[in-house]
Image (cartoon, rainbow, N blue to C red; front, side):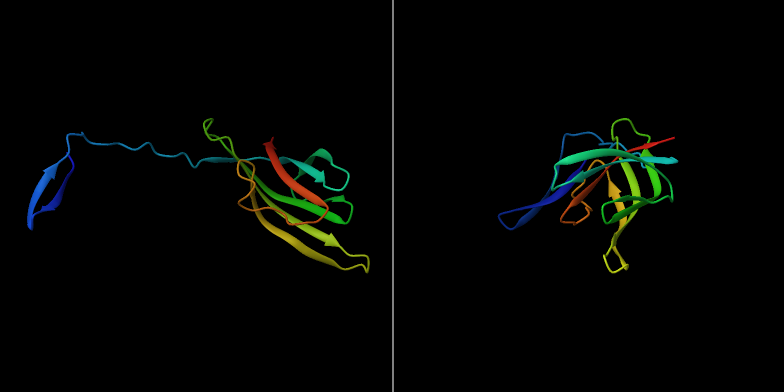
Length: 130
């Protein structure tokens, strides 16, 4: 039973709920680390997208960008199909310098949490594979 104190006309009284004990389900936070990541790379200028497979710690280039995936974790709970990827993205300038434009985790089930801000390319994590 759940009970709480209430006030009415200046006096306190205890009121009880008729509900029984409530048990909340526990969320699974178990992830399985995989060796390969698949990412959709969208060129916003040409409106062409490409599904690209990445091996961990190996960079691939798209125009002036190079993308590296360092970790890929797949949620093993079938009710919450999400993939987390630790990604680094570098922008290679025409003068030979490169600048880090993104370094962090991306979530395939919620792209708005952390996204790459780039005028030409959009990077969207898709899946973690063996």
